[in-house]
Length: 296
Ligand SMILES: [Zn+2]
Image 1 (cartoon, helix red, strand yellow):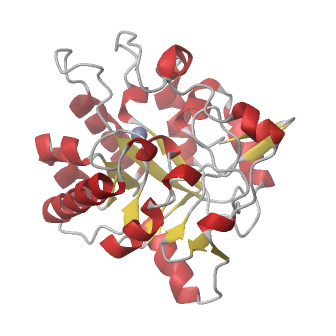
Image 2 (cartoon, helix red, strand yellow; image 1 turned 90 degrees about the horizontal axis):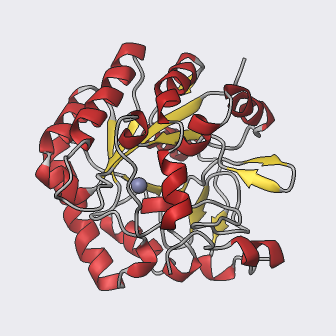
Image 3 (cartoon, helix red, strand yellow; image 1 turned 180 degrees about the vertical axis):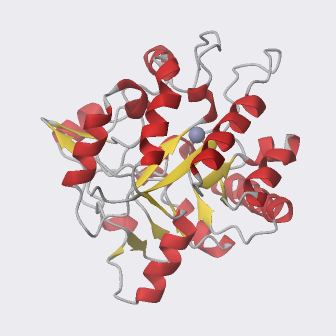
């Protein structure tokens, strides 16, 4: 039997301008319908400014038993913010989601896995604000945002929350975030199952997806923050997404990450503690890959 993976959904409105039709509401309902049909409870991370405009999305997710977490106040990479702006926005987002969901919001997901060394100032702030865990790092070289050298299993940041790093599988020379939306859409399910079979017992496995990936009819738009190539990839093969995610939901599913976190804490076996200032500097391949698809 395959090991179980938690299911997570990052709810964001990626329209490049507000003049375009808003598609995120319908798309989010479509994904929540799919979760309901399969009886799956997920971690649903919502962008704060979207929650303010469309509170019904948060209310529905909470009413259906999903964990509600914060996907930042605005969908921008953390390193583009000042610590003061990040702290004010994130506090506001957490308070809003708690009001709307009636849950204590303990989980944080950075936009685009943008918790990277130059944004390590955010880590103690997350702990101070009351987040018990974050799932915001890709522990490998990445053409967008990665943090090579971090552990692949859950760890505790020194002076910060627990981190659930994005699960990776080694294929040839690269580490693929095989449970991520793009990979679920583009690669055959066999790759996902291979990654799960190769995973270690001490990893916390989680898949992630986005409402827009379930929206094959959206016309192509370039997104300034990720550049043309990544925008194209974000638009590719969306018509396969629902089918691929149905397969994932039919395989063993783990509880939302807040519950995985609570179990880890209760277990008391202790997690490795990572000082963000002491992670080994990236090697040559990491320096080559890092940030190549980011808009400059
Ligand atoms: Zn996002």
